[in-house]
Image 1 (cartoon, rainbow, N blue to C red):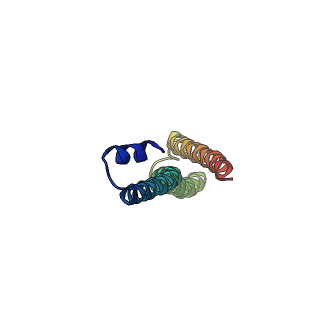
Image 2: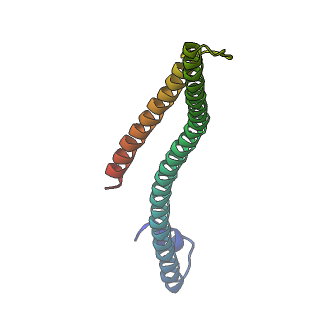
Length: 151
């Protein structure tokens, strides 16, 4: 007799009740084992989903950083385009004035704009490009690492 049967037997129950009680206890134990297996499966699925959420979160952070970098790059690119276009136009005007001076005609206006604005904008653009490349490499490394975990 096991412990459950001893408890039932000590209560003075008839043998039929003892067998029924034992069957109920066995059924409960079986149900508890099934619940434990289900709980283990739920925990494993939760862990898998949490890894997936972490991976998606990192992807979202990368995408957000990329968008922010792109948002910074576009105005600087536009600034560079404007500076280069302005320089080109002023250079053309300067060439026209120079040729007028040589021919004795009067010239007006400013000379070629300072180069430091171009260098500053180009430097900013290169810095942002470097940051974007670093983010891309980090993303590539993280993707390879996570793919290795999935296998």
